Image (cartoon, rainbow, N blue to C red; front, side, top):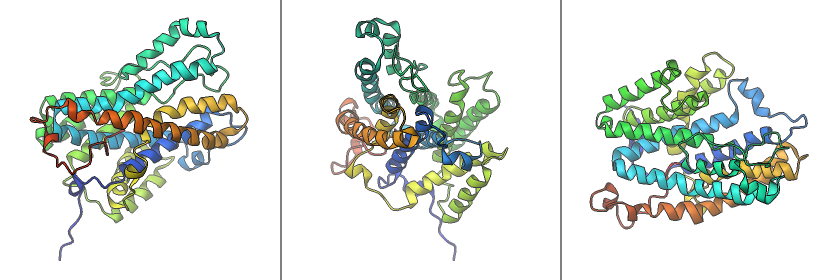
Length: 370
């Protein structure tokens, strides 16, 4: 008797998955990884560096994971709901909390920690240039005048660069959608592989998302996520494959072929954990705190580093985790979730797919990508 394999497409429309838990974990890993850069280590070494053997670091792995999930879920969102739904959904997910984060940095963090007089701080062009970070699509500004200048890194929020990559990936995906490539799996695969090839081998000649080489890695992981969505009919979710991928990831550390083997193995592991492990009802009990953790962790960690300069990375991680979780909880329940609920009011209910959902279904807050 032939064994019936579970495939990735079998989970379409299933809301009980662990993407929220995975994203929260990835966001915390970024916080943990940044603590070694932000706080003076005093000889303390990140134990994970030895494991990765110079191939990567934990923050990069976490950000890559964000982009894999993003590519998969966002591609599905566009394919099922169309262009206008896509634009509204992405805007409501990214901008409200980001705008608050920028205002929080300028009007709360900045005045408290700047070494300048308050009038000089607010009269500085650097302060007002920081407002452009609200657009996300432009390259971020990193500094506020006189703020964190004695820390290891004087930047106010070193995490925001990835939002520029994400928004530009959304633009590319929207362009592909308008070109109707989502209507045919071969066309979508061909388009994504072509963009992937241009990005890997001809990035300098065809900087699709900008000339910053740091943008290349996460954008490639985003495309891998789109490929997983496009080929979900053929991707088997199986424990044996997960074991193979796990072994492959670990033996690839420090090897020349790391960049060719790790991304697919890592991506597969994410989808296995999301769909084929015990469901954690995090959405029900605390909500999706991942975005808030990600965007608020750096300025809070910088504040902790300035207030407690001798506690080291571990101490910074502990204190910052407590403060960031509170901030992320407030962000989700009072900014992100309420603004996401506006989506249905902004869409034409008669013409867009959201109108066919049952009244008993929960709102589409959950599994909205970070």
